[in-house]
Length: 333
Image 1 (spheres, helix red, strand yellow):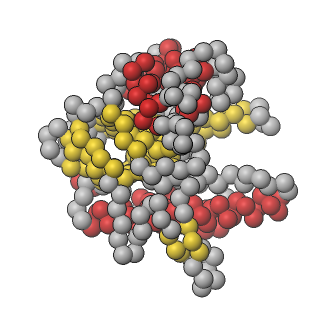
Image 2: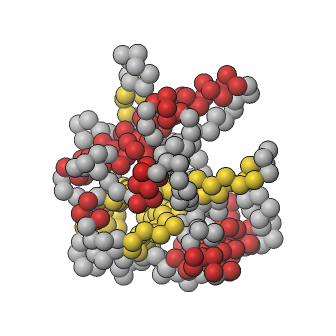
Image 3: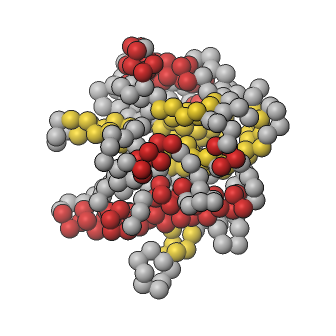
């Protein structure tokens, strides 16, 4: 079985309110990319992935006039993909939902949000002291993680959590002091979300569930200077520690060799510097029982993956489709 996580930049902008693809020469929400070009590129990438299930980060919007499921169904039909079913969770106000596309002949999937006495549902409020002032702060997810129960054709039960943690960028800052203040506040909130999410992970591990946490965590070991202020990244919080640690080989490599060349899952243009920045932001973390099955991870990076580099149409499509690249995991289950 192949599962994937893929952050598609402004997928929503490719559809009208009826969920139909524009698929024309108008500009997409990606810089200097038409809607036709992005749509066709995404079709090429999805066909190449040929995944049984795809956790979509920044999926099309669900709102009063728009529907994630309607838009994704239109996309699937346009490219004759076998991932014909869509499951979504709690909607949000960002126009970027989390959704799961899957092949119904391979698995059964349902939205299955959890809660406990200490860890609320992801559409509720989490209370935690963020700034060590003995007062509890209230934290909410702008994009509540998507919790799924997945049953394979062979009858194996998996728990999947799709997540998109808050960005650390200091949006709205007008001077250096505001950049620092907003950045620290955003880092606190992101770490609080990671702690909340890790508590849910721990509940599943305590129950003996086979678990996969996947998505865009907007963070990685050594990604910025604020780790020194707070001690560790949200990725490290989510991975946890033995004997209840999750595993992702790319995160493990980055943690072991912080000064060595790192794997990356995203590529952003820095206009002020005239160059591209690459970062490891997207992960598929698994519980030990799934790791014992010998899974194979792959980042579909157009310059770092040999097959992607040697396939010009796919290489170009990956660069046109999004500023993130898909991550897949193959496992026998």
